[in-house]
Length: 386
Length: 144
Ligand SMILES: [Zn+2]
Image 1 (spheres, chains in turn brown, blue):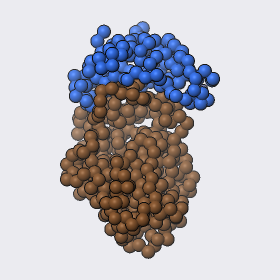
Image 2 (tube, each protein chain N blue to C red):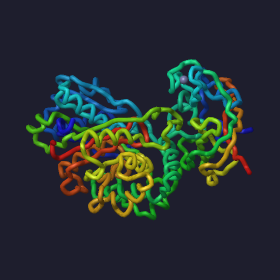
Image 3 (cartoon, rainbow over the protein chains, first blue to last red):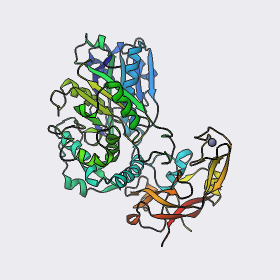
Image 4 (cartoon, chains in turn red, purple):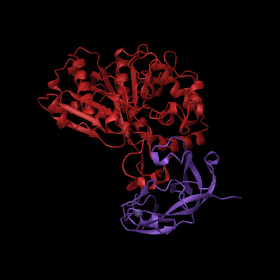
């Protein structure tokens, strides 16, 4: 991979609180893809591939609506939820590098108002399969699942509530500089964080992502074609997906528990890119909830688990002075929860120099997709092609 | 005894894989005939040797809380009267690779702790829709 492909266009809709989007989920997707093509300087009809994760927008319907002349590649990532953001980019990059398509769009569209909110139990009060062993006991939602992982992680490594607070406070601080953020104009203090109600211990209200409506998309092509396009390319230096042995064992019986499923992802990403955690200038780390972010950062090698609290403290993950500014748009917690794909567009903006919390001379911009669900995935963008 | 969570709350649908676990009133775990590995939840394939023939072994039903979560926000209207409640993840003493989700019936949510010793107990429930009699494993603290 190593710079053979690049993101050349990004597109987003406005972001809304769940249920407040004036458009349907499908319409939101069309708007984001159209804007990404415009941003790339590519005629919309020349998009020839579609990749998503957990999405309901079938490329058959999408390509018809968008006037695609020749669709030559479609794919969707397996597994979980927001853990697929980077892998969708990776599949698209692999497709253009292989020559299966020329301009592949990776996207996610989400209208929780239309299809039901992630934070609530949905469907009938009878359950089969793996969920039969958890839901009847009152463990149903992702927040509750991630709380179970986080509680054990905190116990094993002496991590305090303040470490969780740091993730939340950084996102809210960065959102105050980003007019697109749903939480723009709503700063959060440490006192407000601690005083907020529990959703599920150890998660306060502000440890939990928003429920949002919106869509985000990127266009990926080869580095050769990128050279002829108007935007600054965000080269895909490396990408990785991974999970360990029996990581998919259900009902919290995976041998490695707690885990965010990022050990293999980290090993592969650093080996493929030739760089390491210390080289990264800025990171977007999917925060469904604050706890898995800590586990994911530790597994990716940014600090050992018992040093992760120190790593995120003292402003180290905040713009502009931190060693690793993180979630610079406000992220899932404070910009919007577009199932994490708004973190991919922000990572690209950092390479272009267009973030509202722009890291000076950002050369390496990392995305860590949804920690806590498997398989994990990650993508590393670079300003230089090499 | 009445149910720990509200009577109308979610129930498992009994099938061939989970029947022993949810109806026998014993903590019966799936064991592979070929390699003797015990795995939970029961699966169609042994994760160690890919065997597809299983028997059941009974656990003594003692263990310790490996992790827990305390639910405050009711994620469904039926749970409104139940919050706050704790869900525990129990690691079995006699099969340490097995962890089982449940509730700790006799410990208030703010007193649940990791490593707390527990033993299995049972909730007897009837699924009015299917007529199925359920025996759901639950947990209580082992007091010293
Ligand atoms: Zn076996």
